[in-house]
Length: 258
Image (cartoon, rainbow, N blue to C red; front, top):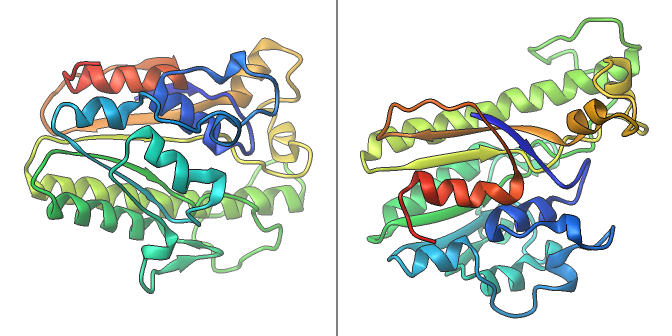
């Protein structure tokens, strides 16, 4: 497990995604550029193409519309064999405005069982994405206290309950892989911190960061937790890396070339 430094805050998922899949950094591009939109218009070396050369089948799964960030076109250029988007989930369970992440975990396990080849599956969830309600939900199982104003506390409370449910989807995935009994690696990471409030309200009141003026605040604003689980080793590591290095770490950990 460890901390990953992402290139975006509050949005811009595709840029973190681009860095992880290609190993290329977006920090050298003009501000506001999204490579999926402006630059990826032909085949590009990425984790799917690297692993397909070694006998893998590459599948992308996303519980949102396939056109968003041009993923329906970009994923072909990155080498994915197929893309299962929101349109291919039949009567899925929702949590708020988005498909529940347990549906995503079930689909990942389903794809693994359908293919004979080893699989590289890149799954992008939506359940934990904002906006987060500022209206109190009396049925929320997790309650937040602390020195926060009522609106800020409610936003944080609603977000925390969503994250708790997302954690259930990770448990479902891990338990399903343990039953399959084939060598597997799960890399579970965030793409950006959530925008909690209109002006970093929750972060400021919780004294997590105030702005980007100091280096510690910058790190807090762009640092994300991630975990790597496998069913074939006992090695434990505490990692800190940028998102553009995560793909290389995955290849090294899985003993694959590239």
